[in-house]
Length: 299
Image (cartoon, rainbow, N blue to C red):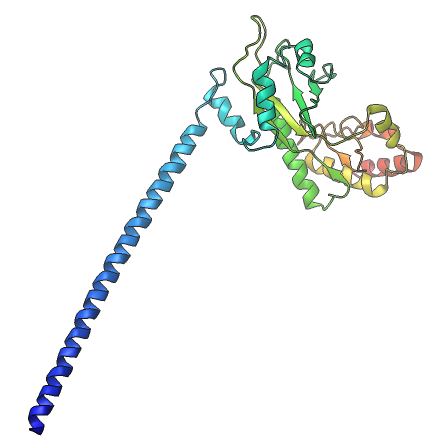
């Protein structure tokens, strides 16, 4: 009886072991299948991501305007004002309502401040009451290309120059002394069109307003106690490192209401020579001596 009982008990144990092995096998099979499914799912998601990136990249190469080539579109694409930027919809409204930058008359009729072409560059710098905190730089349809180059050529240079200056200010920890505006390119809508015979412009430059003083006040401030050796040293360092050809003059490096120097003309950089002497006449006697010493020590 004892032997029979032991055999029955052994048989039960063996069956339990079989059941455990069977369950383990099913679990392993399920785990393997799940892992394979996960792998397949990961591959599918990667394919979708790749196709999405590829499609987005292809869209980047296609100009949305019949007047802008794909080649030009690719040059300005990454420098555009973001679609979610607060002023983007305002710009769309202004420029889809009328050909606001056809000429000076249409510009003022659209609400922009009166302005005249600047000396040398012939650029128009203006503001609009609906675009508070921003400045618009443009060439009008009535104007010829400056130096024979389309407007986007200069906007790209100005943005890249601003990026270089911003990085230099950061690298030298001059944020408390110097600043430079963020700048973007805005694509004007195809319609409304300019009148026949006008040279259609396709892009404008949008820049942060640096809250600078007017020309007369600015020139007077350069000779005041506001300008210190520390400020001049910072200015000298940045324009020298980057070869900012024409930034050493009050008009291009004006003093803003927060006391910092603002680099507003960022088009000319990596020049071999810098026009340091343009700032000299505006400085106080003490700062003039210091500025001339900095210039004399230039390698």
